[in-house]
Image 1 (cartoon, helix red, strand yellow):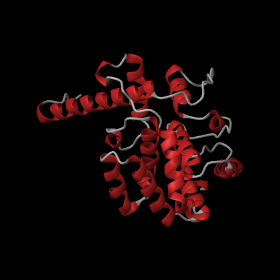
Image 2 (tube, rainbow, N blue to C red):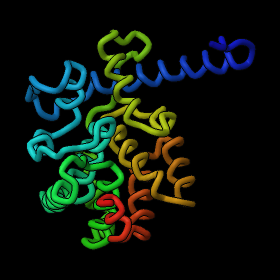
Image 3 (spheres, helix red, strand yellow):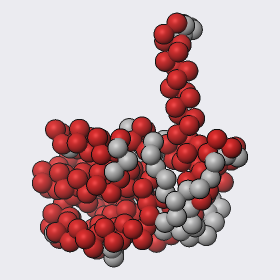
Length: 241
């Protein structure tokens, strides 16, 4: 085993420090966030996951019992939360996702729903329904989701919520994109935009820049708009292969 030393060791130490700082920031945000649904999940989920779900995910999403791909489950739930609370409230999008889930299982009984399929369906749905033409309505719903700003001292955060913070950080591919998060709404918007990045091509840099600047609402809209312009049914079909 090679032990890092010199510049490599310093870089590793700095990465670890930044990771801990981010986890504390996100954990403090979660501690301050209002409860979304107090339901306790006694099976499948540990205490940390229960706190995550109770603070961030409406039970109505869990009641859909979507078989989401392990490793993407919590990210997928946050993306669906944002899409159905901010972009297009109601059940139509979730109904569409449930139909896709049934078709996916029919084609391949052991399949699970990948995050990429959900992102593509959200983009197609937004294009079909013209939801982004009502951006002011979406912005108002985002303001309601956003909730209270965190007032905790992240440096003095208790170990439990720090552990929750590491879980929250794990839901992001570009973790530094959440470095300025101060509220629940900002965090969920960051995860939403981050989930679209692999599907954006040249537009990804602009969305990533918004995330780095802490412009979470703007990043979410820009990501969805860019993906909605290019997403096709053929893109969705790739997930059935």
